[in-house]
Image 1 (cartoon, helix red, strand yellow):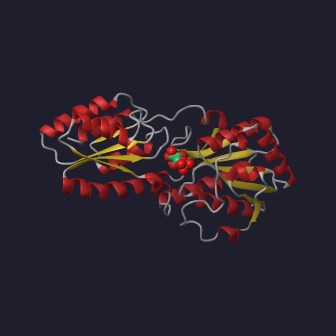
Image 2 (cartoon, helix red, strand yellow):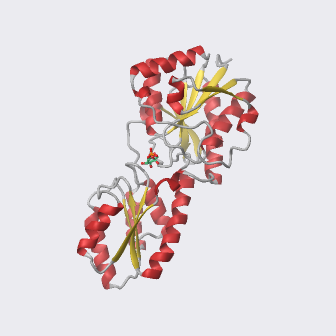
Image 3 (cartoon, protein in one colour):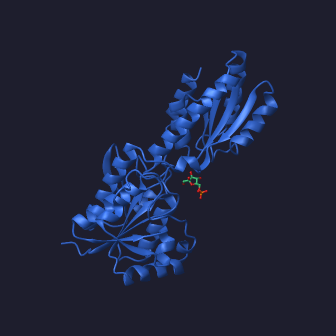
Length: 327
Ligand code: F6P
């Protein structure tokens, strides 16, 4: 018999579509197993400032199709300090919280790992929630699929106008210091080139490509630039290209926060539900300090120690493929 009677759930860091499906699954699975559920609003900030609310089965009705997070989110500087974590621990103890499910990205999971190294008696389980898909230890993060589809829809629209005007477009997408959104959306949209932080010196290759493209009279081009790319982003690379290729009619589009919103895709809803369900079962199985993610389509558990530090790799073969396909 597990000693857990009350479980808390929070979302932290950048919101991601599908977080609500995860909150719902955690809440309803916990209730199914006879546990009480506490929602912590505003992430770790709320843990430090006692923003606790009781969650019942009906509290998570009608949330599956909603973007954002019903629990709100925040990036807490205070939780990075020992005093902040001490306050959070004391609040959890006072609220008789026996276990916590945190949903968020790299910063959130790092916070959970540090907390669990200091305070052993409240087990934490993490779920990967970020549009960036940059969490080592899981093939997939909640929100990535929806964000990717949002980018694809936007780029398809830009392609229409780029083609009509014979323009060269640089489109900047999110991902912080990771290139997953850029790479996969670029493939999905048939981008002529994709610039990502994981690959260096791509500007030369891009200029070669544009040179050849111009000679072949390629009428329009879409270049996807990851926001964390070493070129400095879409405006910087567009300026550099304009200097060398006055013949191209260049435009820039920064997609920005539309990538974080919107109704979650079916894939995000299903995956987030499966992860939320598995997180509660893991806690009842006395697991702690683990990420519940996906490996080859199946639920997988990885210790926090392996999740945070190593950087997830992109597949270089995909970029080679882009070159071949974008003749
Ligand atoms: O981590 C998700 C993310 O959307 C990144 O892709 C982006 O760099 C960052 O968050 C933006 O954060 P904020 O909304 O705080 O500006």
